[in-house]
Length: 205
Image 1 (cartoon, rainbow, N blue to C red):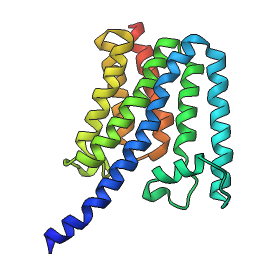
Image 2 (image 1 turned 120 degrees about the horizontal axis):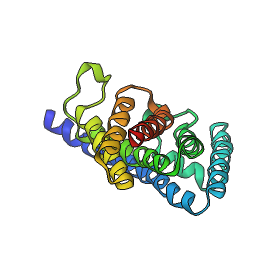
Image 3 (image 1 turned 90 degrees about the horizontal axis):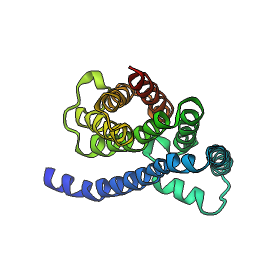
């Protein structure tokens, strides 16, 4: 009975993994923002603003029952169960998170913050959801493996920018702290802000 039940769950797990991998693949595209900003900050800010507004309009139409081409189909393919029948907020907070750090922090701190958002958040989601086994009560359902993956990936992104372990570890630790809290899609806003602030403080020490 248990063997049959386990076998029947395999297609569902594979489907969920494929959807989450696709979702985080799209999420990782935000890592190109620092490169674009280094070429032209103003144009990158306008691109992010336009992208957020465009997505919000199209997603609102989908939520209301209309079916514009392409984007709603992509959105529906990567929706999590808790997002079914709801406005999918994650792309909005993703774009706003990157936009805020570009406007608030110097280029290096902004880049480290966006890499934390791209790599740290993605590592946390994939490792934590599908490979996490240690789930203490104080993590509200999240796994220790997931938050440590967030720390490692965010710190690696910070080191890529600064070539210095102090700000890199600060970025990783700030990302980990945000990742611990069950704030769902709003971590796309708070994680880069916390990571950028941590990087800024430790670079100046």
